[in-house]
Image (cartoon, one colour):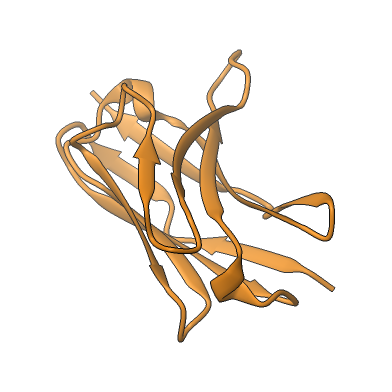
Length: 115
């Protein structure tokens, strides 16, 4: 059974930092690309950052230069370091992977940035 469990969300002031973590189980982690998505109030879910099995990363334009995605293939964990947070980053953040022809999502973690 594939499980993705996020942690690390919370409330932070604009300009602050948070680090999200996602612990994966039930997959051969090192072989799978991982990603973070988010869904803000009255917004559609959007891809924030992704990292390939080989470690190559991509970011949506609105977070490039402020967020960093990384993976730890020993601990089967993917992290999202978020710096210089803005109120528009407020959202539920979801960990995602695709395995065995299916999409798997974590339960989400709330990030709230106050102005």
